[in-house]
Length: 98
Image (cartoon, rainbow, N blue to C red; front, side, top):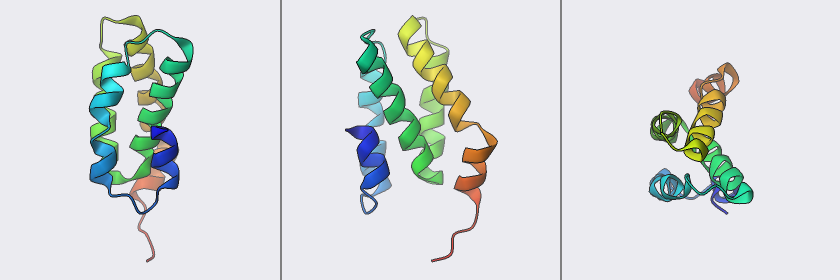
């Protein structure tokens, strides 16, 4: 649901989604396959939503990538890979026409 909210709730303020990052971190160590994938998906979508959310999401992804926990490390490394890609960075930092 968090990933869906990050993509579809366009009018939701970034602060609301930033508030979900501790929840993502708390569940990043759950080894169940669907939970692991959902946490990863949520982290990536929150980080791609806006330039303001990109930094905190990337910082959390890097923290998880350095974790001793195998599941958290997978979540973090996969999110770092996507959030540092040129395509994501270019989209987030291009000027918007409003």
